[in-house]
Length: 212
Image (cartoon, rainbow, N blue to C red; front, side, top):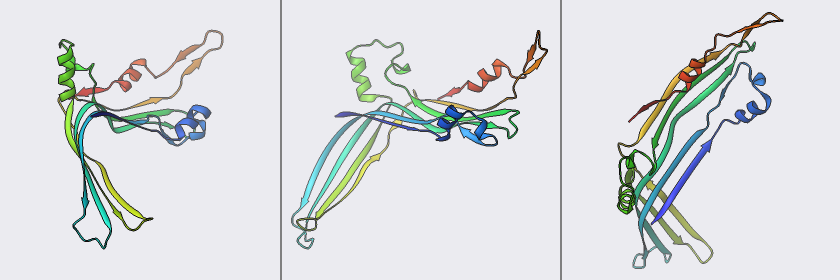
């Protein structure tokens, strides 16, 4: 039995240049602002076996095959199905458009709704370790052939399987756009500053819709 954690993080290389140089060099272009994040934590109950083919004729070569059967218990998961927040600067620099298209699947960990209104004790932990937020199966397959004393050939299929998460999983989605066209300043001694941009627009832009 072992706990396995996998984390993947990718982002647009132009994001670093944007942070360092500003948006002026990217006038007339769209830049992705949001990284793509995937995370999976699971318990892996597994059993393995190896078999040597001694009674079969492979031209005098030795062949071994191995298989591992996995029983997966999903602890937590973050899957970014769509992750796109892009920034576009007009060629003349008069406005900036920000658009978002997000679709994130989340299966929370032990501090989630799974334990809400539940007494935290040894039985709670035991049930969670046996059930988690999902379960599934997987298999590893491999074989090796000893061609001669100096050459061995190996082939394998690793982590071929699935995990189905339960109803505690949540989806967060958002598709929206936002335009910022600067501010207007009138007067010198007692200037008046106006803008078409409102704080509520930013709040609405960042608000995610939650569903099961």
